[in-house]
Amino acid sequence: METLFTSFILDAAAKEQETGFIFRLDAQLLFDAAILAINIFLLFILLSYILYNPARNMLKKRQEQITATREETAAANEEAKALKEEYDAKLKDAEKDAEAILAEARKKAIKNEEKIISEAKLEAAAIVEQARKEAQLEKEKASDDVKKEIIKVATLMASKMVSASISETEQNQLIDETLREMGDDTWLS
Image (cartoon, rainbow, N blue to C red; front, side, top):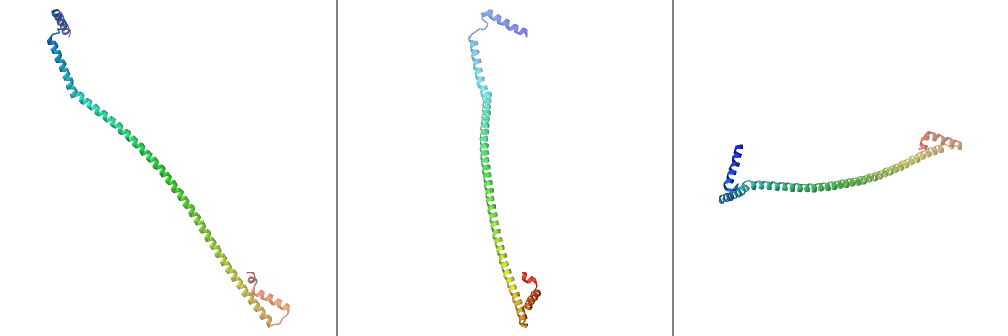
């Protein structure tokens, strides 16, 4: 390798001695340089169409895809927020509705309770009135029975008095005797 490099340097030094320059700038060198520049330019254009443009297109598509994904994500987040707000609103409405239903149920229960109590009071009053009427009837019946018993007693006493004209002491004895026969229960009731 050293020999190759040393031979190149020696060639360059020999050319310099022949022409006085390291490189000769002649028309051939300029023509070769122009052709080389055109070839590099054409190679660059060709490679840009073959390699660079597809790579750029791929990167552009990837960037568009990422942007679209970000936009979709933002839209999904907004939609989720809107749905959450709607859900919260519906939940609050449901709680209000439940409270209203419970309040209505309480009102109905109180009305039913009052209705039952008033019906029970009316029924109790009717029962008391019926009991009073029955007591009155029983009292009248007892009074009639007592009157009948008194009539019987009076009839018995009158018949005994008529059958015998008796003195006052005998009359008292007859009344006492009649009362004993009837018993004390008849007069107490």
